[in-house]
Image (cartoon, one colour):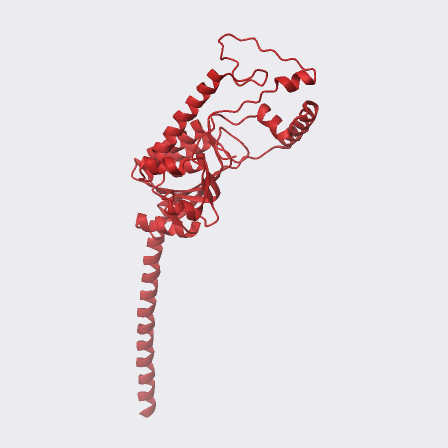
Amino acid sequence: MKTNKKKTGIIVFSIILILALGIVALYFFQGRAKKDTSAKFSSSEFIAAIYVEGVIENRNATYNQEWLLTTIDNLKNNSKNVGIALFINSPGGGVYQSDEVYLALQDYKTANKKVYAYMGSLAASGGYYISCAAEKIYANRNTLTGSIGVIAGQSFDMTELMYNIGIESETFFAGRNKNMLNFNQPVTQEQREIMQGIADECYKQFVGIVSTQRKLPSEKVLELADGRIYTAYQALQNGLIDKIDSWENMIEDLRDDLQNPECKVKTFQVIQKQSFLDKLLTLQSEANNTKMAAQLGIPLSVYKELSDPIPYPAYLYK
């Protein structure tokens, strides 16, 4: 009798244990299913981390204007994309190219999407110009930024040097300013005024954008916009940026702004592979530049400016 009662008790206990384990398992799998659904929802939306690196011009080893503009436009029309996180590490570049990117980002925001900007070691001049399209600008504590100004062009008067080493250069042109800024002709006062006019117009545009986007009085921006660079702390004190923090924390702030803490990040970075032939041509070009600079008796950096100038006018920190 006692044995039967003992067996019955074991059976009842086993049934209760099985039921308890079943309930625990049910809650466990329901919890996992719920978590997986949330992950699936978050994966449907993403933040695009776009890297803007190097001189802002049509194309170079680290930068491609066409790729950048196309990427921004594609993201605007991508229903799963909810925001852009810009990582900017650039000394600036051409006025035309910088403004194209700024306008593309402004257009992107018309789709009710967010733009945040983060500054790397250097985000100066055109780099800062692009940053102004963002709703929030973050910087690393060691960032250098600012350089709000413009270079309209450069002129090297080499007529005396060429005469001394026996080189004659003559350009045939029509229109008294058509040969303006050529190294074989001194700059006239009229030409100085022409170039200054271009610089002033581009400068006014830059100051206006900083004033509007950063909500600063024009008078305040004009005080800041003397071409100098600022540390991150100086930029923060003067209202040029919003926060000094890490890239990771900026992403978290953007997720909070989007009210999507699980929103993932997709990286968009231009990768331009250089072929073996390209490398050989680059080395040959460097050798030719060095040789020509030595023959002319001028610094290599000056010769490079003459032979391969940046796109002027330029928002560029040099």
